[in-house]
Length: 433
Ligand SMILES: *Cc1c(COP(=O)(O)O)cnc(C)c1O
Image 1 (cartoon, rainbow, N blue to C red):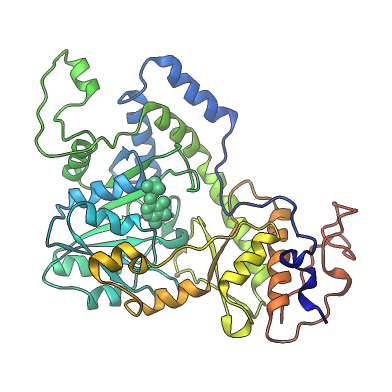
Image 2: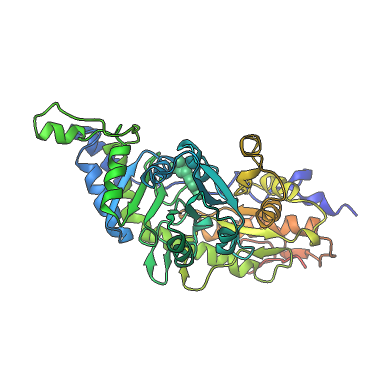
């Protein structure tokens, strides 16, 4: 029997004709108007929209200070600078993150030290942080993987005991909370990204929030060449004079971008609701699926659901994650993988001598993880397509014998209002055994 013959990978009908992306931005007329308004205003950069955005953002995350920067990566770099990371200093980062988390340490001449993640949550494990502490450790960076805040009270206790800086890489977790407190106020320094796949966008952009006025000031200087006064201040004072007190960069965010970001931020609460409802729909569809293990959420956390990550039970499948990934792509489902553990990248292998075996939990997770599409504009129907495609693929590659798919399997293309043929309108999934 040619069991796999209905997979799109083998020439079968795909679940979707056009690929559903794993994440994408939403732009409406209000966003466009806000940017056009700036174009007509005369202030394209270092103007009033920057201050307005920073104040709005700080209020949203209940942080005393927010500083916009040109990207999340620039924000991480600014945080490393604010903590005075330099040559000889070690900064503990989780192995399972986007490379920028570690790269920012290297920009400052510091050394990233990769700590393993908790197998349940895939968040930086405080015990692993502890076992990587040395006399050179200067800071810890937690990463709010997939949109779930780390246990910052545990990390802060550790940091306080050792006199270390603590940074939240909150590029996934804008809008998340821990015990009611918003991300952005959970750590002395928190870094956000506004890249288009993130929860709000300014094209490119980032924000650093802090509870510390001196750090906010250091970041203001750092993003503007280390200049003592910005263009607007000098304009207001009709003065040409400024001083370079320390080396900075041009990491500014323009008024065009800040106006877009302010407009986007207004929609964030409803987008978060949509993300959470999509995640819930996935949760219930996948609850009984023996081939998939969900990533757990810590008690007390309100998740931002930037990513919806599943782990494959490879022991119950005949193929590896790469094959499942390829089969889902052929079905029109834009799955992704977050992330290749940073210490396995050639750059870090070469420069730091890292390699497999350093962070076994992250390495094992990497073989099993798959990010399913999630973004605010996704409909229930889109979610159902993902689930249908996932079950179709898992069934084809399941080690255990799958039960008959019969009439309920496969969309009825002749009647798009009915999601599945043989279905009475109520969503019905065929779960792999
Ligand atoms: C997106 C991201 C970054 C970098 O943000 P950019 O705005 O793309 O520079 C850093 N860390 C994590 C965890 C991210 O997801």
